[in-house]
Length: 443
Image 1 (cartoon, rainbow, N blue to C red):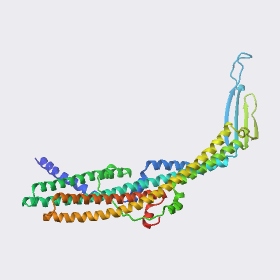
Image 2: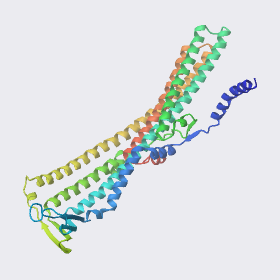
Image 3: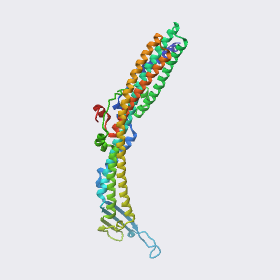
Image 4: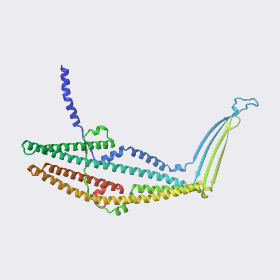
């Protein structure tokens, strides 16, 4: 009986203890800087890119390997004896011979400096790719973070809407009980409250799902999603006035894609130079070889030999030959890269002009949305007063509340769109958005 009593008390206290432990779990406070830092730290693609950078850097730090000669060493044993003549096959140490040799071969060609430059450019390209990938990841996380902040503000507004609907329902219930309003009006207020509750539930589910995906992307385990998560920050937009032509002159050359294209042109120019020099320039070959022989039938002897040769190619100078075609192909690849650079520059200019124009029109839309939200809120307040006084129907009140909710959501969506557009402009200019926002006018 005592055990049964203890088990019963434990069963009653266990849920409370679990609830207390869950409530005592510290909240996860997450700022934008922390989110970006963790995303960079846990990104597998960035880790792979960092490996490529390390490999390219190792090659660039060991350019002397392009000049390092080919060194070889060998050793061998041989045995000789009669088979059908003389005494026939027999094992004798006099028939055993051995040989050792070592060689060194060094070839110098005209394309060697270009080959070294190509290796250095490969390292610079990998480093640029890593920095660009890191910046793109930061922009992606920032967009997701701001979107969650906007969703959180929307949740707050939906909670306020639900609170208003529930209060209105209670007022209508009391008015219905005293016979001041009809049953249909009361049922409509109940429906409005339930609809507001459903909208809030759906929005909260979508927010929790998006937040969980962000936490997993940042490297948090599944238990982190159970903890309370507090996102620090708010969307506070400032008007940005910028002349697109000034931005193009100042920052176009700093775009990662432009820098990458210029490095590619430089690399292809070095490839063309290397192809021409390797094919048409004379090459020098320097070789040394030492050889030693000995065995049972002879004493050990060695020899040292060396050679210096100059090779002058002829066929690359003849049009139509294979090597001549490779030179032509290298030049064509370089010309195509220059055309790609022009196309990329034109596309980038168009993008910057379009973003700055869209920012202007978006700000005008935000100002209109703010005015519309103020008017809708005031209209709802007056309509609610009229409904309480019996001069307004419930459908008019519901319509006013719907228009207020729609105006608030449009304003929130417009502010989020403006912030995301600023991020796109910052990415197009290869700049930090916070430096642009702090200036407020000319970036």
